[in-house]
Image (tube, rainbow, N blue to C red; front, side, top):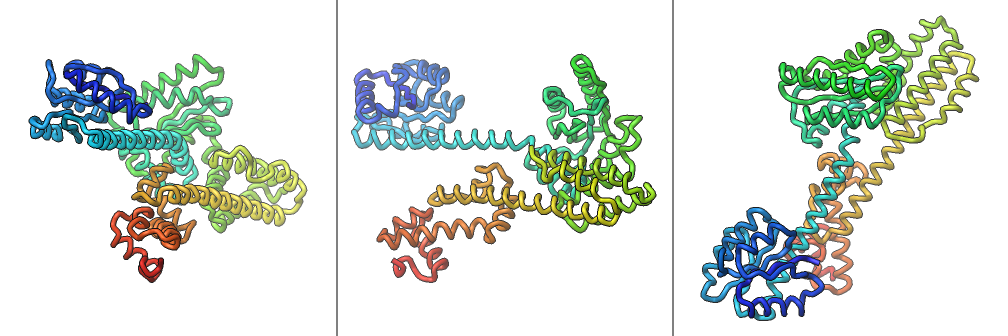
Length: 503
């Protein structure tokens, strides 16, 4: 039920309004108040949630136009209908300047009353619908933000091929405009995943000071990437140092393990993010010397190529690691197998982390057993190359399924709304995607662009309606064309004949 407020100083007029509302709108509107002066009308409308105000133009204490103006200034979404006599008609037109779009002329005729109320009711319902859509979109965006932040961090950490392209795109999606970058890394000893409750607390503190921050609580480390302008300034570095002290104190008061925190240097080129991350990560623990060792960095490179689904590059990276191991371990199959068992655990954990999976892409226990059963170096290498190829194939199939699922949602939205003016922007907002990415994805999955697909849906529906004997004017409106001539041209372009000949 929508709430309506009646502001009219004439009792007989209020009675007439109530009569019409009771007869025609008893299931739509609930009268919240009947007031006789403009001052009380303003107070009531601002104090409560009111959808529609019927406001007489001439009232004591405060006239209707001034009262309507004050309400519109504070609550612009409130619908207001001005009530006026014929002699005040020109005066009532001034209401347009303050955002009042409708008026009723006394005495109220049934048809006029219903026509004006229906128009306001339609506006209220449309606003309600838009509000619901906006709230839904905001919630979707909120749900998406942690995944966008995670993707930014992991692509930077693993230095994937698409990391720089996606980085700028994701920055725009998150509405981050800063042009300087600084990492803050947190890790505990003994090594373990830091608690989500501590991560949420730390994230809140940092975002209060640096709003353009993206973050992720990884397998062993919490990673914050602070994006802002003038990060090198003394004021901002002092603020960051104070945050580091605060976080260390919070952690020391609650947990037994020791927390290590390290901030990076400030850089101004996003292409150097991976380098500065690696430097900071290397110095996080002074005693942890192997973090920048050859195999560790190569493992990350192999993973990055797997994420890029680049089979040739992944095989090449693995071959370099394998050749290094053969030389380093003097062809000792047992020691190389031991390294490779550790490497598959690394791969498995990183894949599950990156794709937010609960189940692994391959059977870890079976893979370890397979490795243990291989006793020569050539077959060991062959087995791992096949394993990497299998992982890439599984990732590609999973991506394909996810893409198809997204496009199916878009197609469903089009089927439900083709009669409206639905743009690619509207669809992208509906599913919380960027317009650019959705456009590419749609063409990739469907083979045609969004606009052509929408035309196809509309024209196929038009053909069906015309076959059923519907008039061309009705059909054009049914399939989203307000202009009959424009529809006829589009139909002829699609089918090769005019709507008249088709029917």
